[in-house]
Length: 199
Image 1 (cartoon, rainbow, N blue to C red):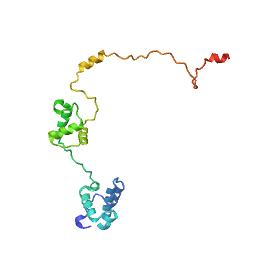
Image 2: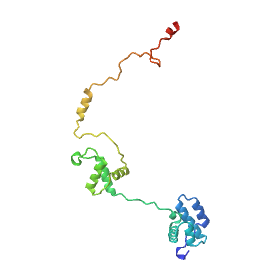
Image 3: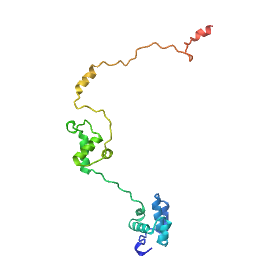
Image 4: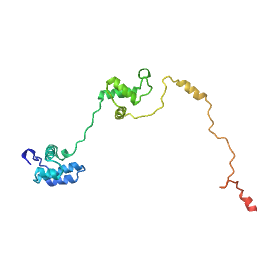
């Protein structure tokens, strides 16, 4: 390799790199390690790259990554993904909103649904989220989806309790019934054992 792309790390030899490649779970990283082992053995960059299924420029990039971070630099970096559209302050305000519950006069609902929270987030912060995304934010904040029986805001709990107390209770005891005569499989009544012996 040219001096500009030579391996400057001296912590691992070619045989140690091969040993590291044999224990590597990531197949792509193992190929990169083996390519670098070939370079350390003195194989030219074009041959080393072709042997391990890459072009010279790609091998050059991996040499730079190896020089900077060692064997760990040869593994694929996991993408952190898109960040949340809501800031930490907005998420804290969402949690307060969920804890307080909706005001029926203002929000027009008696309990929060994800679609209602989505609309409220858009109204308050101008942030447009999908219903599922609202669910993911709520899960991240430690909330779980619960289906509870809705309570009407104008319900009279006192009247409901009075109704429960004055309503007649159904008796739990079943009325006594005479035991049914046992039947044979054919459906006719069975005779007592003494009657059959008397014959």
